[in-house]
Image 1 (cartoon, rainbow, N blue to C red):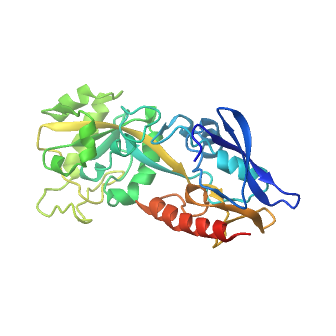
Image 2 (cartoon, rainbow, N blue to C red):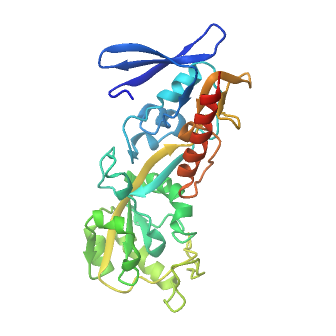
Image 3 (tube, rainbow, N blue to C red):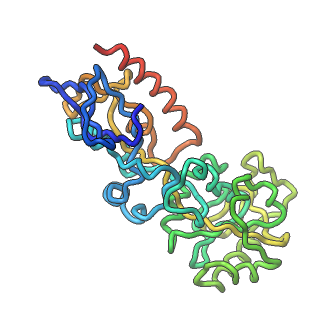
Length: 320
């Protein structure tokens, strides 16, 4: 284990096989030889330049949910020796998070910023409009794309609004922020950072006129309680906002990791642009490309890390 030390380059033999790494630590550059190398360095979510290049605006100014050190160094080193890029390089895991959070989150904050209970309320942007179907599915199946939808809104900001019928359903993570409260929707809108307040009030009243009562409301499944004549409609859990006090939480889009990575085979060997394994090079975790496209089922990144981490470790240990 080397502290305050980052991998800078890969060592190779005359035949192109990977034989170690060059690292940079407090005492400068150092070569570390090994019979195999496993890259488990994550994606490039903390690299604003790469986000701008591969994800495009507005992702260059997205808040990063985790470490500031996932700069894509492992990908850079592998691509430099001919590794084959794979998967959706324009894709990413994003999530609605509190707009009050810093640009980067330390380990203690990472999982406390999420704002995923929007299926039980409505979201409006700074122009006063709804912009997505909050009830398309349970949050674990939509949050990874709705974080991106929020980021596209004016100022990359949205407000999640709830009333007392559903406030008890909010995730405990909402307790990390103090909500804005009011006894009427009009008063609530006045307190929010919204540029077109009359439109916001109109949007909320139109939603209520087309929403449902709570007789058949079931937060444990898609209950089919849908609005009508709205664009977009809310297709599940569409309860009226009519039980004050009303509360609002700010949300923006936070990036967790990137989907683009490297091509690997079933032994986690990194494949080169010649479609052959690069001798001595393996990878796992978020560096593997092709696992996710456009969306992400909650928890599967952890599964991928555990499965391919074990495969890569075993393959590297057996490699000679």
